[in-house]
Image 1 (cartoon, one colour):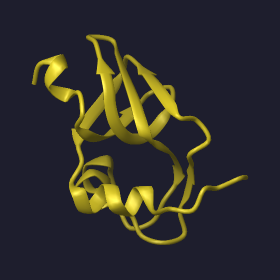
Image 2 (cartoon, rainbow, N blue to C red):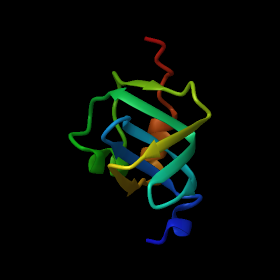
Image 3 (tube, rainbow, N blue to C red):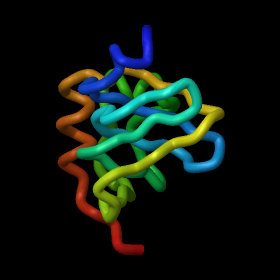
Length: 98
């Protein structure tokens, strides 16, 4: 998929430095992906891998943070298109305050 074709798509990203991120692609270049309307998963239940998170979301008992309006992931990433069902579950998680 070309970088411009990712814009506007809901995704789950596994990033070597930042962990597991989810949201809507605002911008994409060869080395960075900028997300909006999303957050970071700190821990989760109900999925064994990011591919499963992208296809079916996660279940209860999760820790997610939504403190940042825009997230930028740099290099070392696995980016997966997320299903509508998965994004509804991810965006519906309670904001974890640590």
